[in-house]
Length: 239
Image 1 (cartoon, rainbow, N blue to C red):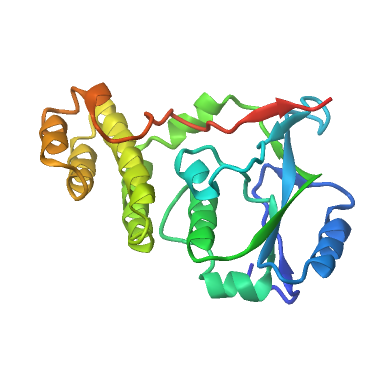
Image 2: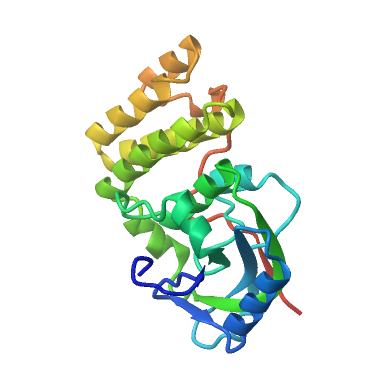
């Protein structure tokens, strides 16, 4: 799609996304008013059958560290939230087609790590369908192939975080989450792969805990909360 596009601005939609009738006009005007940014971000509301049947805002934007929120799976915006300057998106390197999920998560973290600039607007101009529970989506995202893909993804992101040890520690927290999920599902190979990833950044004490089949998770000195199965996005009901 990017290769065939002819416009100077880009918006991406997943199959469960909708744009409001004035979305394109609004975003183009905002870019004309704010020409110095690589991308702009707009608010998203979830729905089930009609765009006004839940009035739940995804996600709440605040002054917390954006990268840390992404790494905590508290995703500040989804695929359709941003509009990109085409040349900036090409410079970023486009989508990571080697992974089968979390592509938007990886893309936005990569953009932020590389210093791409953005501006957030509270304007609601897009919607995402949530007519199935998060648990159903989470089940698919915990297959052997998905878990292995997450580990490859973490390794790639780690290379970009060489100067940010706090971010790397949070990646190890996600690595533990993968190990925990793989162990619970009996994916021995994925569990071992996750342990190898964790060994790269753990102290001797932490390694011993990991080698003990992750038994003492709550005592791990990794400063990171245990990752939930899927989605921790902060939601707020609109008036």
